[in-house]
Length: 290
Image (cartoon, rainbow, N blue to C red):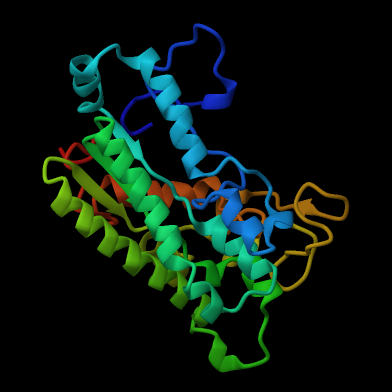
């Protein structure tokens, strides 16, 4: 909206002959950065929602590329005027493993593989002609209703002053620090490319720190839509399932269903990226920079 562009069409919903010149959304619900094989090899495959991993989505992009441009010169010209958003991806990899009972220490060993997959996809896009790429980090998962419910602790010291689980937020920050290092390496390898790190974590924590100031009168930890409980998240009555109920005004909540954010929360994060406060380096072509 800020760039006055139409919403992106989902790749799998594109119709024959439909124009994709304004961009395409390759995201898929439940997708992982790592290929499905990684999870099946570790007896975690049964929990996967989809096998449309980041590599699969990259394949979709390559398939679509011929519809966007015909040769290297035209592709270079087209892509130098394009912004590639690589994610957020990787969060589902960790979700699946945590929900199966994996510990934070165990999952830390997954981080290099997840970050490597994101870095490899970013590198592949640059090799295909991408020049401007934004790569988001993970959200503060310790503030999400699903984690607060499933990993509730009797120890007060396990929570920060805002009510978030410190250990899980620490894990998200660890992933983000590793991702930023990987992006620094890519910047050295591809000095002609502009690679932006999107700090979703920092942008989200700003409204967690000051919910009322940001209009979240319903709070930032409790889900708008759910089946009850301290955080309105019930694994047996998730949003949209029997026994769940949605709040009257989602705009005053940051958490939609315990896992995903509300449109209002995503708007806060998007504005932080556009105005440069959560984009490193700041977006040069921001529509709000004038």
